[in-house]
Length: 415
Image 1 (cartoon, rainbow, N blue to C red):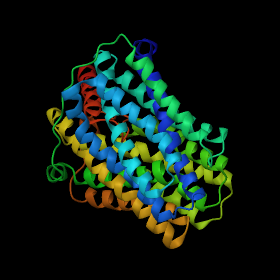
Image 2 (cartoon, one colour; image 1 turned 180 degrees about the vertical axis):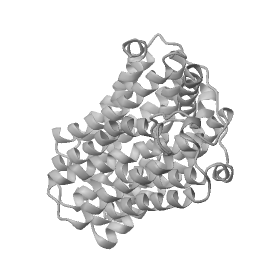
Image 3 (cartoon, helix red, strand yellow; image 1 turned 90 degrees about the horizontal axis):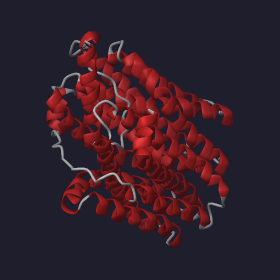
Image 4 (cartoon, helix red, strand yellow; image 1 turned 135 degrees about the vertical axis):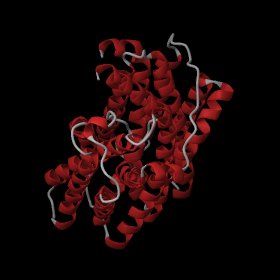
């Protein structure tokens, strides 16, 4: 792991700064929107716009990279991100924020694609899995660190918008000044949703539902916190606890997934998430207990996404995995766009508890659908299942394919 870090430190440091900037804007806008008097419904549109831009960017970024190259795309998108982070404070209008969120979602999608292809290029076949695992850990740590930054200034002022803008600008210095050559770039063709559903109905439905859960955490947590009357400090700690739970529980659930029927594990993990949300709805919890709920919800969300990807791959040939990953990311993006809008509607209808009710509905639906699918098709034996990889909903299809390719080779060598 140390060798991987020394070979990719510039890229990883740059991504750390980028994720701090992205983590700050997600939480800060939810808090600042309440200060500006934006309604819950308006903020749900603002938050949903990021995922619309991200989905569009995932389709357009590869073409941009092919036409003008990694370095230019990286620098151009980074400059736009830095500018948008400042413009939020300059133009506090929810319609303008919606447009800016589309733009910044597009930019971050392109940056991720570029960074991951760079990382794939610098890593060897022997350490690519470690490199990408380190990359995803850096992403999580960056977002968690961003929550601490929220407490260093008044959300009603300009400073909290300027600091992440500066960090994003600085993030490109170690990357663009690195001696590593820009990589060659190949694209992957996505499967259609119909083809994917034919291969794995549970994978498609589950990934769509988890897109909504992911959007709830990444986009609407701060909006819920302001509606629930939490302080800025409490909102930042609650958000950090969600991502910390995802970081901690990813690997234990992954370990289990290689040893038991993945559908049964899906049901159990999803119901644990439902139970965590139900506790928050049914009881008037103190903040300490709310942190426990955050750990549970965060602890099931990313692992469930990874588990669904692994389950879908169990029914694919190796040469289909890249195309399937692209299709699953698209389905996840659709769910992520709808998620904040649905939460905003529920919160406007019944209050802050709508945030947790939405998570309960999605995770319970996943558990029920997984139980029904267990009656429709026999399980793949544990001995025949493919490897589990900890992947994030924001990584590109090429990265998912690279991770699974290496793990499949390692599994073949050891068998």
